[in-house]
Image (cartoon, rainbow, N blue to C red; front, side, top):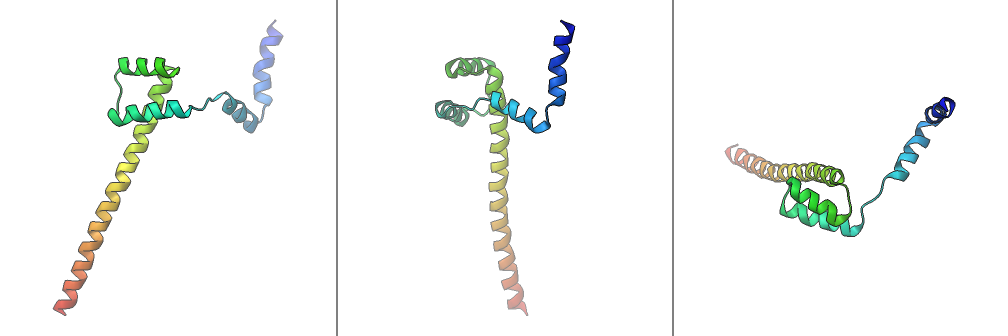
Length: 110
């Protein structure tokens, strides 16, 4: 009995890192397009879920509440990054316009 219990950890240790990662990826389920659409629609309404809404959404979509929580956490991170990119682009355009105006004024003075 003890010998059998030791075989599983030894087999895991003998597995290459690549094989181990692939075996974990096989277990990872992708969300369906319907689930993604429901999650995105909910995210547009509220960026952070209260526990009751999370439980209802998990039940409606057939997912674990933890999956919903992690999806929202990752989505908020992507949303924040996108917001920062947009802000950067706006500030860069304004800076470029001010720089061009400054250059034009300097040329007029000289």
